[in-house]
Image 1 (cartoon, one colour):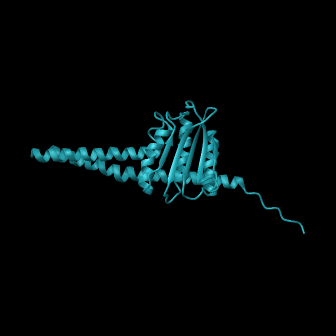
Image 2 (image 1 turned 90 degrees about the vertical axis):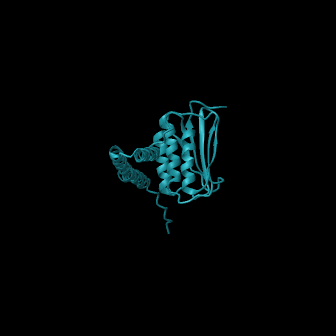
Image 3 (image 1 turned 45 degrees about the vertical axis):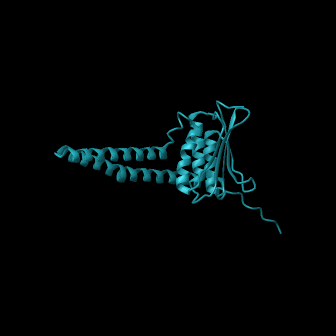
Length: 219
């Protein structure tokens, strides 16, 4: 009786599934931003306009000051919300301050999501890479953490390395990436020319390790 050889995994199908997942996530982000712009920002601008009309028609000085104070408050809240939406679309620090600053800024959002303060270990001074490389590395971290419903511990390290490379590691107590997420991560890393490793449970909880060419590295 001839032994049956196991079928090789359909890598093309897996890659196509990863692309579909990536596109689905992008569309979900766009819908979220569109809803926020329509419902939150649109309503806030309408409220500012209404308050401005009320202030313009108000004869009582005290009430007019209150109307103007309301306009300032609503405007401040709207600017803060716009900054949040901008951070969803692109980390604001990535172009000027780099990957380390962007990860520090994102840590506050992770803490708000899971109620756990991430442990950050960043080389000082932080290694820098080309903006497109740093953005790709940042998106890898987002893609790794986005599917996770909850975490009790999260650690990120951005360390200098020999040979003109910096090392980014992410560790958390959640499950390892599922095959679809793993393929998505590998595809993004490959497109950016990054060396990505996705160790399993045997590697002390490390979920992602990526090497990126650094233009400034402390020995």
